[in-house]
Image 1: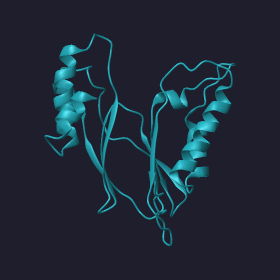
Image 2: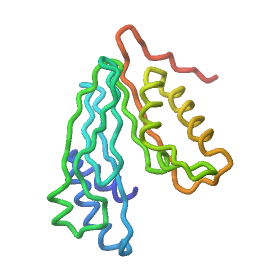
Image 3: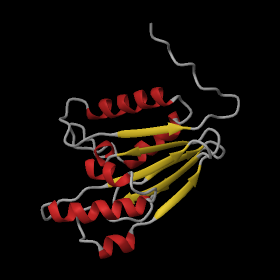
Length: 184
């Protein structure tokens, strides 16, 4: 995290940032270990996402206009696996235009690999179906529903991996941001 933060302020190029992070990390990481990252910059001004992946799960992009989910996965190799030449050749940047009402969802593999007592995975398909089902909810409610879904599926089974979800949604026509709650 510290490497990403320190390199990220030096360049707006996500690929260049990850290339620099990989060079340092490869020297310090144990053989067989790696780190995945989905590096995204959101431009609120022009409603775009600038993306780069280092071997991470694809981003789910729900398009309001078509009520469809799309997987967005720029090419990229996990950090720490390659000294540099292969990593630098594979890593790609991608730009996505967001339209009114669209939602993006990033997640770690621990989400879709959540197991219940019968060792059944939550799975990608169920995650995508729920994303589509709850896509128009405010992000706080979307997250609440998704966490309930994961916890219900898991039941009493132990959690075996990290679980992280990041989401956002553009405002659809006629929607307005909620007023911030003032503290006294």
